[in-house]
Amino acid sequence: MSSSKAYKQLLLGMLSLFIVMAIGRFSYTPVLPFMQKATHLSNQDAGLLATINYLGYLIGAMIPTFLIMKSKVIDLKIYLLINIISVLLMGFTHDFVTWNILRFVAGITSGTVFVLASNVVLESLNKGGKSHLSGFLYSGVGIGIFTSSIFVQLYTDSETWASTWIILGVASLVMGSVVIFLMKDIKEPINLENKNLNVNNKSEAYTKWFMVFFSIAYLLEGAGYIVTGTFLVAIVESIPNLKGYAALSWMFVGLAAIPSCILWSILGNKIGFIKAIYLAFILQFIGVILPVFSHNTVSLIISSCLFGGTFLGLTTLFMSRGQLMSAISGKNLVALLTFIYSLGQVIAPYFAGILIGDTDNYNGALIFASSLLVLAIVAIFISQRPVQKKLKK
Image 1: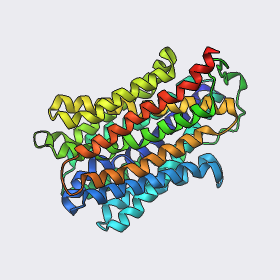
Image 2: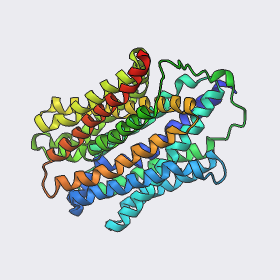
Image 3: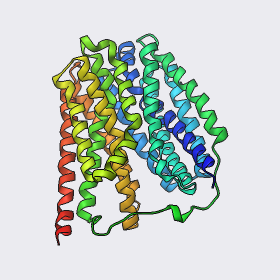
Image 4: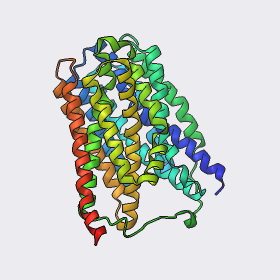
């Protein structure tokens, strides 16, 4: 397969993730505080909307494992179009039940497109001998968060939140039409020579113990990061001297997320993936807990960048280990990791909404999220004990 076809699939995959993840999924974060002002949406209901969306994502991420209607590419286009419609319709209603349905549909379709785009693009890169470029695929999420947050910062307020959803939906439709018309199935067989799996049986001595606690750590990451991922802009909006920078905070998240997948992958190869995971968790913990102790502009930027620079990076690190464990064990551990990560995302926002209650104090939710990240670090540490013992023998 020619390199040009691989590059084309990569760019179209990035555009797909731009639409369903950055807009369909994460644009809710910067728009949320304006929706709350205009419609008197409570923090509990805001958390419930997020939970419904993440529940949909959990279901959607598993659908391609059990059901392909036509082909991966055709299914991707169908789910992409439904996702765009769900975003567009958010601006045409103030009904909370309808919002729940739309966010649930957006969650399902963002999950299916994420999995299908990953499969289609990674397979194409492999066929074209360009698998080393896979990290670029997920940078589409960071690019989307960055650009959409600039738009929200410049345009959105409590009077224009509905038209924000409509404009984002129309923009998604324009971009989505590019994917729908240009993405094609590639029938060429995989070049097995490009599937070099560098496995050292001694250094990769995975046990059931390791897999259990490694999975628990990823579950806790899904639960820990998503609290900030849901409420960051609302948190900044609640701080009087930072109110004007609320949507801008999400821009810094996207800016830091753009190169994070590639950089953490490189770092993982240099210092080892487990050490890189430790470092990413520590940095994310600092980013999540910082707003509890400091309310100045510099700390806001640092917090946003640390969060943005780690949440996709940790996904890259865990998924790379998951792929390797799948190759060694013969089981689809990537699908399992995706499922439990989504499970963490479903549970945490609802409990965070309860902790916030009717107040504008988010400290309890941030402490809850940072505590989960500490437990994730502990889980990673525990997962290494049998491996270390086995390596000493």
